[in-house]
Length: 284
Length: 252
Image (cartoon, each protein chain N blue to C red):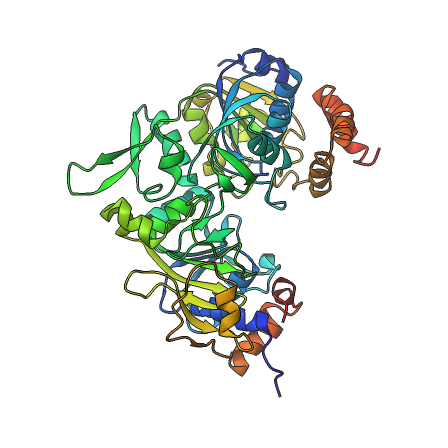
């Protein structure tokens, strides 16, 4: 079996301008932030990002990486709004397809099942169709229901962060919620999982109950060991959300000078340098 | 003797009454007062309600606000299962609203035109799916003309006029049950499903409600929101919210 281990920068070297990238996790929970930070360091641009959005969206927006955003919401959970997402929306910097949360799942499922669309009731009557002119309805061949035909959300790449993985791409989550990471992987052409720790396959199987093994190796092309790789989002039970750091991120976004200081301190170096800066605290 | 109920406690009672008759369904209260209301309902009239911890578990007990970990877990409810229950329909959600209009359309997406918002909010979240799949109510902690608007900027949660215009598949399971604000209780039981004042909270003048609402309100049959019983007050004060978090969301 293949050894799929690589570095965050090797993952990013396999991405290209204009790609559609799905990002797993939910809000400010179990986001593949080390991979996001590696994209921030790269020259990549014009990305289409598909996500249940949190600070992944904010940081990518801040760095000008996003051409189009496809999302159900963007929130930092304990802080309702992400400052950079708001800023980009309010200054007209990005195109958006804003969907109902269930529609986003439906689109990922359709892509994963190689279907052009799946029917869903969500969206009918709302402004989702009027803000997304490509949406169509479909009439049931069995009765008189007319439903939203949610188009497949095909991803070039899926980026997800789980608690443990083996070198072959089997991976498990140890927190309470798988979110939609498996659906992101099934919907994508290339799939990369970062994890807190790479363990032997035998140990992986005993990390949790069998149903915690969310990803198997046919769903994964690359494995990256990135301890703290979801920081500052939560990755329970390994660590909770770093609320102090998250607040610092929001405060830093308030003006150009403080943002420059934030990026200089945390986002200008390697992932190891980021983790070291985080360990030394938010106060400089 | 029990002291008189505060406005926050009246609001908690009104939120509890949202779930009357719901039986064995998932109650999904968003925000502090709806959560308090759902827990009070479970301890009194609706013992079969299912309550989530807001993360991924169903709570077997009815813990005090902010202390979910003291409860046993009776089920697993990650987001994907919430989506299943939304589509299945055995759920009653109480959402917030940045804007709500006379037919119960709700906006949590953005202020201004969607293509060029002046203020970006959360996004559609689950509001489109919730409203066409199962009963929905709303909680508005600060009633004002900025929230109760003639017409919402973006329809996230679907109101009665939009559901009707969208056809039978949008209407089939659509029901906006009630709106509770810090001033009163409202429903849509009128001939055209426009919003109606059901009751003002004790101490609130009907004129204040009318003035703080941008659209005309049918006030003909309005009464006064009921007072909690002594037992309900005891549950709110001693069991569910001994730290008085409710008073921070709604001042008297």
